[in-house]
Length: 393
Ligand code: ATP
Ligand code: MG
Image (cartoon, rainbow, N blue to C red; front, side, top):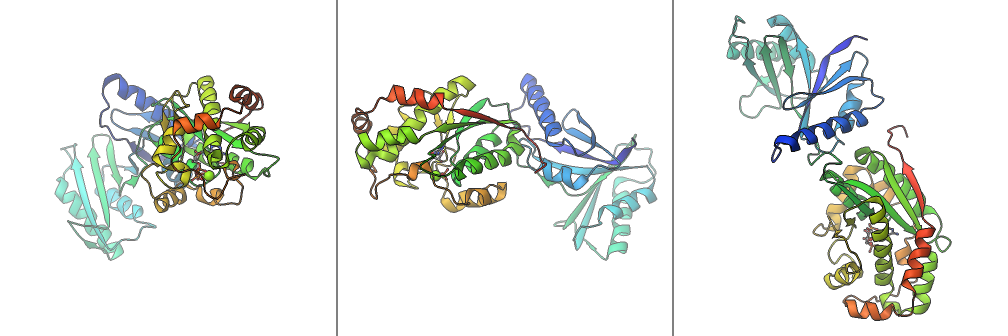
């Protein structure tokens, strides 16, 4: 198949990337880009010395590639480049073609010429090309704050032209920062928490607790769909589904009502801790945000997390609800998160839960239940689902 004269350059933020680290980072990023672009018909993803190039075939869907690149963690920005000959008329026409579908009133052309044998200087090339596009489009030149910029790079191998860069999400490629176990509830917050961690390069494994038959199975369908959306950045994703009804029954019959939510959350943390050690996750992640609800005050967060042996990370701790919602909309989880479902944490919960429970109080409240046996039972009932990564839904 014939290659296209268009290709992408993908750039990453280089801060702190040196030596071996950098090679590791770049290989992961290239690998993740290949995963993301499966099925788009691209020709090759290649690591160059300070960027990654994506070569295309003639029939590659360029817009689909742009859309997917905006979900690859670690991409700072990218651009479509067009290669043309070292002929001023060809350069002018290619620049004009690049304006198709773009809205702009002002423009600027910047040229770098590494092939000094070319008869025009860099400023002359910029002027010629700018003048041509202005004449064809009615735009004006603006050297300071143009709506549209053209970059022309005239080299010994040919001329490369591109317009404005597209912004990527930034962050680090998934996989370079280890693995975390995300407690995914089906609500708005935890998928956003997962996304924030993925953005920092951790691979997410997911765990969800459900109360069937006390609740319907809506939460299960929701978490599977949320996991699928998150897999667009996290790729192949494991989801552990834990039956929680029996355990809640024990808490409801044996412990004081004001502590119930906190005791549910403690049990979830204990079970998650066990799963984390099996899947080699180095931290638990929750969607908690300080003081959003009664169970998320500082004293309560502390008396819940003491039962964990690994760190409990809360990437949304300083986010307001409106900020979390905006992020959920941006990453595409909001719609699914707001479908109706009943969370197991809201079952059998009193109107006025404890807001300042100490560790000692919770330890005391738990004396009537056989923690070990309940954890064991829940773990034996776990079902593992693998959500394989695909855009085809
Ligand atoms: P979310 O919007 O993520 O449901 P929330 O504001 O409703 O969060 P809580 O219900 O108190 O807050 O839950 C706090 C955190 O505990 C959640 O963000 C999630 O990480 C975890 N969690 C709660 N319920 C579940 C569940 N059924 N399965 C897995 N994790 C859960
Ligand atoms: Mg919730």
